[in-house]
Length: 68
Image (tube, rainbow, N blue to C red; front, top):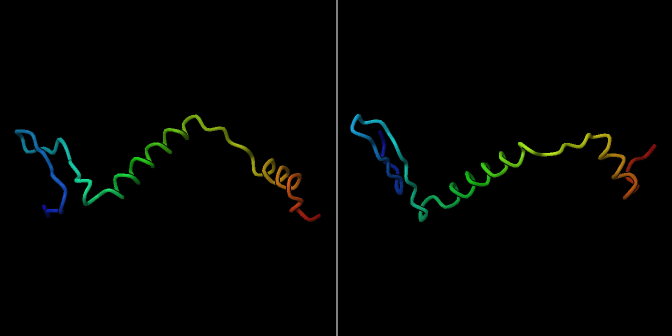
């Protein structure tokens, strides 16, 4: 297995990976993106969806963008 700078893999007595540790000094952007993705996934579980037709109607009322 190749070594990555700032990544430590801890293994149990059987040699199975049990934990991966990322050094923020090297992987800050990756960690932020990953955590943002987890947050977005959690928020989508309870998200309220609006149909495209409702959005178009609202935009037309507010901005008059739909031409007939």
